[in-house]
Image 1 (cartoon, one colour):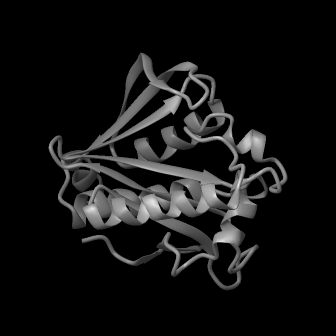
Image 2 (image 1 turned 30 degrees about the vertical axis):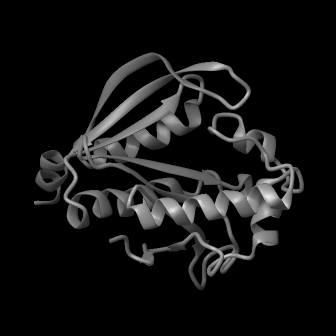
Length: 198
């Protein structure tokens, strides 16, 4: 159902699985070994991985969700000629709620790759996946309150695709440490997306 790989002008997205990434390499990028990981995970729904086994189980869980058709997760690498060619610079994907015909894109990037427009480029690909391939009706993007950097990035691509800001949703999620958080929510409808492309 999901494409195994997706290419954007500067990025190659490949299904995140044990076939596409080395578990130890993935662990290095998601653990305390990665420079700046605390800043990277400050607003994410996961904490830095403590063990290789945690990374192994995380990848296995993503493989199961892929097979179930509920989440397409991709490892992100710059294409030839771009800075960091071939390196894992993060991962991103689309979480699908078939009952609601809803997709929620997700992403994290290593700190050296912030500010290069990669988030928006990946978002364009996820919107295309959601609307053109999966025929979903809505893509919703939650951004934790206080994460102003991500809000600016999301606002740019949501506006580009005819979307809107829906407001601040109080007590919308719980972090792994038990902290209750608020989310700003943005959305793009299938109709708006297709209208902007015509």
